[in-house]
Length: 452
Image (cartoon, rainbow, N blue to C red):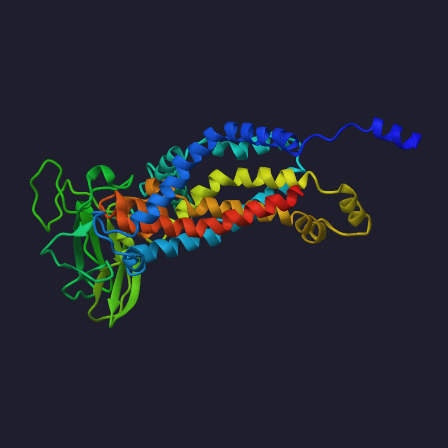
């Protein structure tokens, strides 16, 4: 009895139930008070626009007539929208996969170099460049003019290093002087010629300042007779500096055109070829008797190589994806590198001691252990790619804007860029939201699981 009384005396009286709940309610009220500004901003900047867009998508362009799901049906009948969906699918399939792969490879390689931090900084620096600035940079880099676009300047230099360009890309035959143009770009004499003849082939369209170095006067060469069993002639610039001269006749001040390929053609086949000398003369010393046609081959007038049309309809989407890779590769590399630094080194060392080479370690140990990090990076990039707008809008020129459009740019173009149909634009926005939400939910759940 005494022990029981002592135990009851030592036990403090229980607090009333209402008083016990009061601190919990006060704590929740204080937490809600602190979260209220963020909740208000979230509602004003996210929830309200989403709900408004859903409601607006059910009305016509003016916003006064309820049309139900007509905007959603029209969205999938519009060719421009279907092209935007196709381009968005290309972005989602290509860009995140390439970025994740590049980030993984670079993260593994950077670990093995001495200046790893500097290299990471260098690759991460494009993230500090705004999409607007990056778009302008790559719009200039992709310019088709080799004097402006660095990529085409490199392509032209590389091409010209292996293949000579024609010095007479602007040349053409003088009208009415015996040369006719062929569909393949070559020129052919209209009248047949025979051994013993001397033929004058006048060309125009070449500025005197653009003549090859060493080009000499054609007058002396034009006055030389041909051998009895040969055929000779001269290819010259039928232009007299300062004016004057007779068209179709070699005047004393007119220059020969060196390096021109001349072909003697008989029965549709090339019987002989010659290249003009510095004074424009050519000679076929021995030809069988008969009639021939002289042809100036199309290679003489080939246009200079101007590079690749990076922003043409065929390559504009890959070109913009390339700019996107330049910006985001550092991001993927840093995140994957952070995951790589947490891998258990004893597993890697044990594999090396068992005789595994670096490729086997990378494929069978590093990649499987990094799978959670790679998944998070990939899904994050998928979400980002679905919302891409700036690069597409800035880099793609006006004539190919429709060929490069994605859902985000199409939404803007339909709503504000000339379409003025905010009902259809809101439907596109809802579609984009529906595509992004699953990836966001997946990422959030993955993050919560990793926290546990």
